[in-house]
Length: 485
Image (spheres, rainbow, N blue to C red):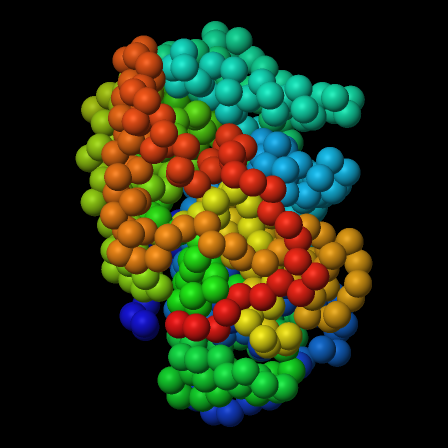
């Protein structure tokens, strides 16, 4: 595995400049711990905080390959969303009652994270101005209807339909054909949130070793976490590694790692004002290759394209192909100008990319690693992790503490299934499916019906906002992921 530090995204540059943190403390000796967490992103940090909240005396150590927040948690789109838009997939996986409970919990997390930031003094630029599920063309209009009706059957209306004029006027995107608005959603500066969680974890007694990549987890009680210059003997180990967890074959079979690409403009507050985009509304459309855009505190526009935009990893290696500057900055800028024509001529000041751990159904899964009942994992957030990672902290906390509650027994604790083929068929198939996704989006933009072959190939892609079409996954009593590498 490549142990080089991650290239810095715009968000993390800003966060580190404000924080001016002390030098990281790599692990350079042998240590013991009750729990060792591998990964310093949202999942790992929320789990650490959850464990110390439940049992303050618990000895928790966290290792991170680079700096906390340098992975997906520090360079994502910055959308703090619930799972209401994925209610149909939740229902298929969890059943009606559990889908409602989990969706409501994910909704409550928005206020919970806002309150946590306020209480702990974390300035993450969190503004709760809602999220727009936009129709970029006529073919996408009404994509939300089945979801809205399924939720409405329970007397709830977290997502409401907007006419085209209202959707377009709210964000200065004149080509929108309509939209659906979820009020309970927020914008955050993702790296500031991650670095704030790191500070709180340290204050609660979590030992954090950055610049400490994982070499190997040796099974046993205690398990041994090997790093280049030290080791940790821990009663329990939690793998919170996001896309990097595909180094284990049992996880890799259920997750596809793709790249997400983003650009950010220079500050253009006067243009935003003229466009009528005066708040922190977050927007994403219904393309198969999702496009999303939002503003920043200083009046920039961040614009991105979701997973499967063009770069795929091979096997269990997540390295340079999903790091650094985006290879798609020019097409992204063209898409930004097409969507927001009032920004014509505005350049992209910076671009970056990062790995996205896409599951077939668009929802994460949790379990134990192989035959090691004391090694736990959570993976598959599929591009919506800021809010759900808070729930992941509860699930992994309950699993690690052997607490039988609604989180350790929820249907998201499930065995990974063979949802994607092995290499080289995975890489070849991914490229073919991407071509089909591009063809469908192009046909939709042009008002044409995609070909049958295109529609068939698109049906094989991992779920995005739309519910997945696969069979219902069966929760396992003791979910396992093999340790083969």
